[in-house]
Image 1 (cartoon, helix red, strand yellow):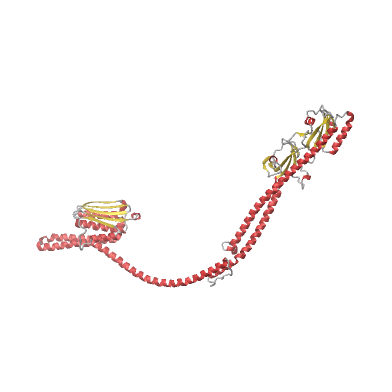
Image 2 (spheres, one colour):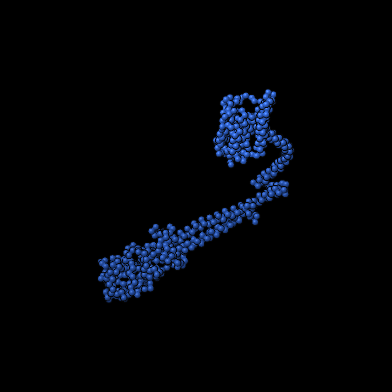
Length: 606
């Protein structure tokens, strides 16, 4: 079963493809050729039925013409009105006609007054026929029509028609009319002499010009033919108006209708429009065509099966070398063999095998090179690992250094300021003790307050290192609390503004901004002598700006200040977080510090 699975075998795929194509082409060819054969056979059948209709019409017309000629000949014999003493001569003429044409049910002769003077049927003698069609038409010339059945005369026969001819004297004057009633006993079915086989399914009819059945089955005789046309059949030797048609009968049967005009001679006057009609069931029309179609279908399928079988055998033969190559490749791939089996020849399989062999050789050579390269990489990785460990150690040391700098900045912002103030107070006490000892006690109290304040600031710095208020509440609330303490401590007038988005900023960079604001406020408190301070925190176009402005004495930023690290610390912290620091100041111009930091929208999340 694996060999028949097209997902596992190229040969199986090719075989199934050939089988599918052969089946598809066979079915298509069978349908196509069968359709052509069906159409041709159906057309031949229709043409044959049309020819048979013409033949039957011609035979019936000739039969009627022959009998009409016999009546006309009898009329010439009877050139004068036969006197009573010659009635035996009339019976001899009637007997000869009846013997020659048994289809004559009766023969009668009427005088110029329209009274039947003699007839083979005694019941017709003496009847006045002046108003009858046959008398009127026969007095003018040869006439063909339908007289109808006399009472009990030929009641079991099928009426085909009647004929009449004038009886003239030597001067050409009409002196009477001779008429005959004709029946046709074999008319209900197609005459066997017109076909190669007995076919009772084909029925023959004679219709008048109004479509009333004159000759046909008893249940249809003297009734109008009421078939419903379903379309004209294929080409036939008749004209378009007389072309065979498919019709549906009231009982649901579908039949093929073929009609031909019936003529008894060019000079025979008739009631006109008589037609010979042959009908055949539609199943009969297509019976032979269907049989031939089935034969063509099965022949095509057998040929397709033979083609598919030959294709399968050919495919197996052609793909055998490819299968051996695939097995050899699989064996090499599973390390069961060292070399590929290269088949002889110059076809695609041989070229493919040689290409695989070269690829295998190149892969083995590259494997050796890769092994060598892997050993070298392992050696280099070991060297790089030691280098990375050394760099990691240096990175840890750099982190420690950064922490030390941070601590140093925090100490500068807290203890250094407090200690400087305390040192200044101690120096003042020494001078005061030397010149005014009585005032030392009050200054000692002030020095004690300075020391207490420095201790509080140191504890506050330690608390800020341990507890991150900015991370918990955001930069806005933390900066607001720091500004409120500044206002309480200094009594300076000022204002603080922060929009809602900026107030939510609270990552590690917010801690640095808070420390920078604390340093700036301490510088305002100790150096600027300002009476008004404003702090604003705002965000515009993803840029956070911290602005601290006072109306103090200002300073010259170009003047060096040894042993003062406040501005240096601000610049270091701004560079640490990638912010832009700008200080606008001058003597007696106040000071404005701006810190601008680009912040992504996600950093403002609550």
